[in-house]
Image (cartoon, rainbow, N blue to C red; front, side, top):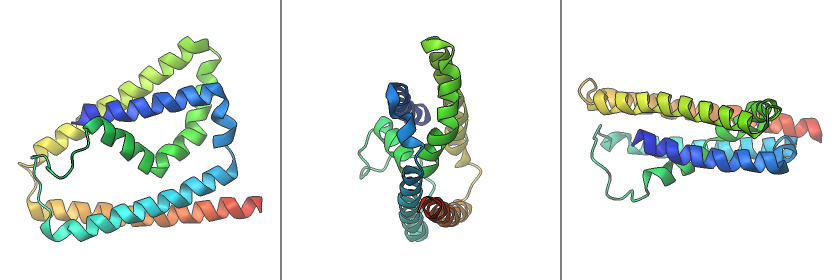
Length: 174
């Protein structure tokens, strides 16, 4: 599953890199775009946290696919990347810098950067996916629920940070 999720993530990133190369970079660097992304992302994170907290009583660590979730893992990789405000903010700041730097070496430079970035994502998240798959033998359902509760709490903290950052940036341009 992990590599397929990263394939979706990489396809979305490839589309974004192409858009940046075609001239969309200045749009993403506007403070208003940052603010809207941060605040909208905060609400998405709050929704995710709320859903995680609600699922805690019945949550079990299971490697079986949920029949209700019919999205393909590649599509889920795209959707999870879009839902992550850090993804957009990273690309609007650090990612654009990398693209502009690698662009001075032509399309080969951009291709090398993108390939390295994608391979790093694939390696890291494949390790994470393997750890989760093997974690069933190390984690009880109670410990798993505790980890999910901690992650949900962190999503709430991040969402407040994103609201603060979005409002701060917005107030600086008004």
